[in-house]
Length: 159
Image (cartoon, rainbow, N blue to C red; front, side, top):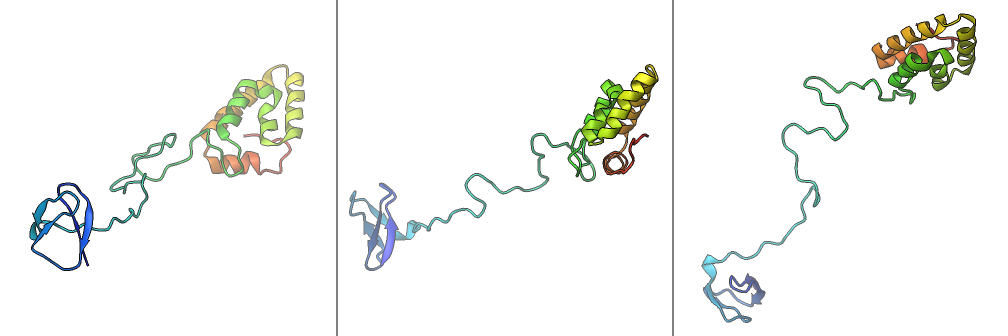
């Protein structure tokens, strides 16, 4: 059995034996078998219907940083392995560091209460110290931040 497809109507049909000239049983069109190519079975693509193959450099996804060289480094506001962001902690220390909010954010409640107490005792000098600490937090790398402020055993982690 040989399968053919009519070039005029597109219908497929089978014939029991090969022939040079075939007549379509549906529309009656006569066509030469040597000039037609039997249809190939369709196979689903290997990569799925919505994912064309990617060649060359990959485009970054929306929201991911773009770097010209080297692997992508985490940003200031990206959370680290502990889930704490050095950018958020640094901004809290700069804006309202005298109230110890950045220590509460980092999980050091004793240091937060001590910071509130020191703000009242020093009459405004302690918030300046916390401003400097916030700038230091923003400029250090994520690993140093995690070691110094998140995983520390110190009651009041400074600089």
